[in-house]
Length: 378
Ligand code: SF4
Image 1 (tube, rainbow, N blue to C red):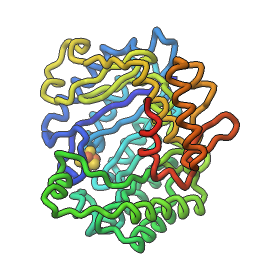
Image 2 (image 1 turned 180 degrees about the vertical axis):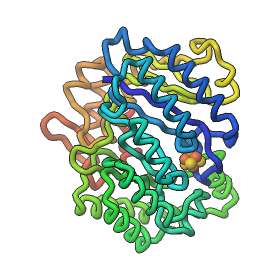
Image 3 (image 1 turned 120 degrees about the horizontal axis):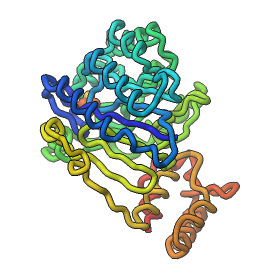
């Protein structure tokens, strides 16, 4: 199994908290489409020697829903030609991230017609004042309409994103947000604590003292509410930030966690062929001028220690946990034995648990996963 990720690097306005690579030059969308198709053609044998077939396709960004239906269809058709996909609608998963403000019934029908079967909708909040503060383009009513329009267009698999843990979010409003989300009944919900990234507006406001973050105990309570309310509503938490109806776990994202090969196309996209990694620099202007894709891409060299720490991090973020035997067989005994002794200490203190050879972070401690995982890095 293999996956393709397409990074669409356009946003018509920037959200206060976001540090993803994107630009406002939406006038370059057609030129981007042409470059992307050229890059896809150049990489068409990427998976061939590995004997794996493309099973998932993901348009992320940036804002993929700023692409015109014609560009979206042209990219999809080219990917199918170059990577021998008979029918994109038959892929295991074909996801497009959409901004609710772009999700008109016509646009959504065009995505469906081109083969997309899963949407990831950046809802973030159902409170207009919060959406405005985040500098999102949409309001709550637009998000609700977009969700309904997506169902009418035929999408049976929709994920929504929600943000918690920011200064002005009260528990009461967070509860209402979660109840509204459950009422909509999406197949998948991803929810993230608002992070303060340097270089963003939020980061600058924090530096100036005009943004006061929520105390950790309050964010922790909001995370517990997220777990409780969604679990009660029948969602299964399968990763720190991800909840799904049974069988609706995100397949494309799960492949990153499972070390499945993936090809990233577009500026700033990362790729992994099963052993080597490369990434495209985050520059649309350079991307548009490219003719030599191999020279453009930067190789990433990971040491055994890097691989080890990455495996620990990706496995412990998932409810499934880390397989003791797999870790011991894949890495040097020097790395794994030190890890197992650190893990034993954390099992004793309740930060980790182990059953059936799987080491995992207990549900009640998942909010603290970053710190726990850091303690296990070698
Ligand atoms: S729309 Fe998405 S990618 Fe663009 S600025 Fe907002 S969060 Fe970032």
